[in-house]
Image 1 (cartoon, rainbow, N blue to C red):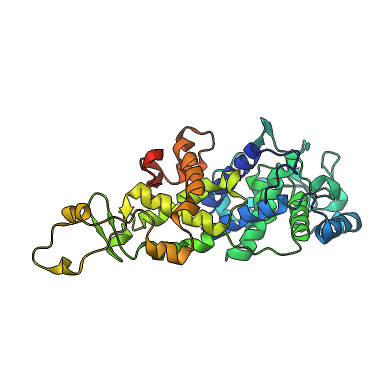
Image 2: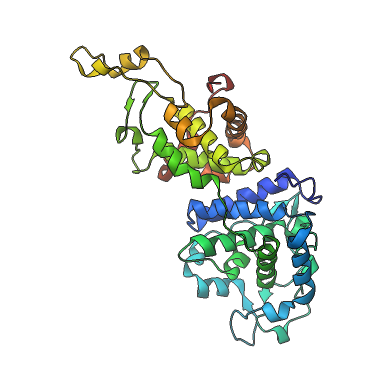
Length: 380
């Protein structure tokens, strides 16, 4: 799914900015990690449709040429006067008043906004003002699924809207995304982009993400092990719970997976491989190694936990149990682990700090503040 060579208007940096913005939105609106991962996957799948031909592209072109925007649009309210975005937010979601609005996405030094000069949305199609932008189908997404730079954030909004409808109990609305994007797009543009995404993907909207494999790999990771500092791990003890009642290992894996969202080179790779690499790097960061305990470990002469760690043969950060349940050996993980580790190493000084800021609070065990390993300590 290496698509940027076909999306001629986009770059890796633009995609990373969009991913950082989506992560920030997911945290502000308390979306489940599954929703975030699905939204990101839908963005990449949509962008990968560019110039692929076939029924997906032709059906998108047919939809764009025969469907009128006015017939799709459902008014937010039946009112004769324009309705401000703040009023839409307070009526549909009272909590929006308490949330700090995420800044509009800036791509390539320019704000990804439309050329509208009005601060209001007209809900009656017959009473639109001269300042309101009417969007044609080709302006939202081209017949060949090529996305222009100024519409990239709109793709992100549409994909996250679809993801919330599939995964959340209380879904977000197009008006919520108008508010979150600081009116960069109208409700009409977002709903039309949602239809274009569904058409381009032929409504194949569910897919496997790295989060889909995380729980399975974490269970395999907690079977047995020992920390390098000598603290035994096994089942309940191995949960490594912090003061907030959360699982440090799980939070660290989620942190590394969200860092991986910023890395375009991981897009073509199998989601299970990315999840396995995140678990490996999390175990390495925590110093968690597997050990084979001798049968006589319960005898009175059993050494202390510290000496046991030094005496027993270490099998490294990747255990036989993890190899069995993931299907990946250590050499399979190396390149993916190093790419995620490179992002972890530089994220503190990066301009894209949403992931780092999200996971440095006590709620997530402050896992982003953990010391990043050197390349030589990764265990390869």
